[in-house]
Image 1 (cartoon, rainbow, N blue to C red):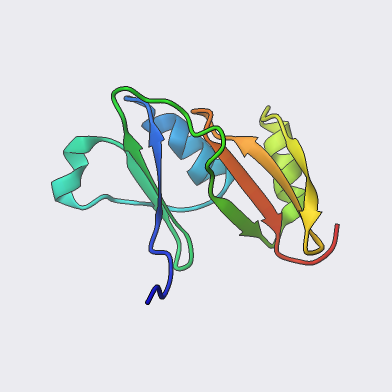
Image 2: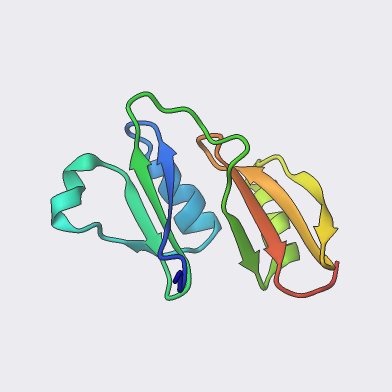
Length: 122
């Protein structure tokens, strides 16, 4: 019945769009997509490729997701890890799963994000 995951929605506080663009657009290199006209007044922003869709929506009583999280595969694991470190993000190491290295980072709003090496190596 389920054929795929269309997108993941994460929450952010009001006026967080520029910080979202800096993290998801600039650091993770996921291009921003213009939200549909009928949703633009809600705030937030969308980042999408042909395989990954991350939507950030504004919550007036925002609380970061500290346990629940998306897990992104990356083909450039080590470079992404260094890029995030150099940008000042605290890396939280994690044990490999099925021979895939992984780590966690909190986005600018404190939402937990996991990154998994697409290759089965460390």
